[in-house]
Image 1 (tube, helix red, strand yellow):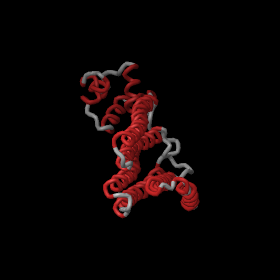
Image 2 (tube, rainbow, N blue to C red; image 1 turned 60 degrees about the vertical axis):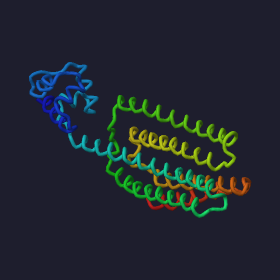
Image 3 (tube, rainbow, N blue to C red; image 1 turned 30 degrees about the horizontal axis):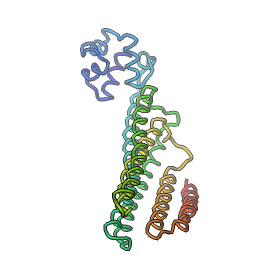
Image 4 (tube, rainbow, N blue to C red; image 1 turned 120 degrees about the vertical axis):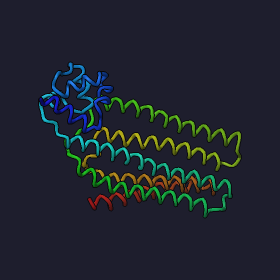
Length: 285
C-alpha cells in the first residue's frame, strides 16, 4: 500500500486537490481516487510524470515511505531564493536608477548644481546597500541549513528554466545594445545636452542588468550553488557596488569637467577598496 499512501501524502504536501493532480497528469479525478484507494495503479508513462511532479524516483514512489520533511525544505528553499533573487536584482536596479536620476537632474538644473543630483544618487545607493546587507545576512544564515548533498531539482525542471533564462538574457543583451543606439542617436540628432540621453540610457541598462542579475541568481539556485561554500557572496555584492560607483565618478568627471584622463584613477582606487572589503569580510568567516 506504500504507493497509494505516498500519492495521498505527496498530493497533500504540495497542496493539490485530486482534481488538480488529475489535470496535471491528464487523467480523470476518479482515476486519482482509484490510485489513492489502492484499486488500480498507473501505467509507466504516468509514473514517470508523477516522479517529475513529486521530485522523487519510481522506487521511492512505489516502495519507500516518502519523507515529507525533504519536500518542506525544498519548498522553503524555492521560496527564499526566489525572493532573494528579486530583492538583490532590485538593489542593483535602484543604484542604476539613482545614476539615471542624477544625470536627469544635471540636465534640468545645470552642471553646477551638485547637491540634488549627487544626493539623489547617494540615497538610492544607501537603500541598495541596506537591502544587500539585510538580505545578504539572511542568506548567509539560511544556506547553513541546506544539506551538502541536497538537490531539489530534476533535469526537466532545469531544462525548462534554461529556456526562460535564455529568453531573459537575450532580452537583457538586446536592451543594452538598444540603449547604446538610443544614446548615440539622441546625442547626434536630437539633444545637444548629453545628460538627458545618458539618463535614458542608464534607465534602459538598469532594466537589462535587473534581468541579468535576477536570472543569474536563479541559475545559481537551480544549480544548488547557494549551498555552504567558501566564497562570500556579500563580498561580491559590496565589490560590485564599489566598481559601479567608480564608474559613476569616472562619468561625472568626464562629462562635467572633461577630465577623462585623470578620472580613470577611480578604477584602481575602486580595485584597492574591493581588496580591502574582501580581506575584512573574509577574515570574519
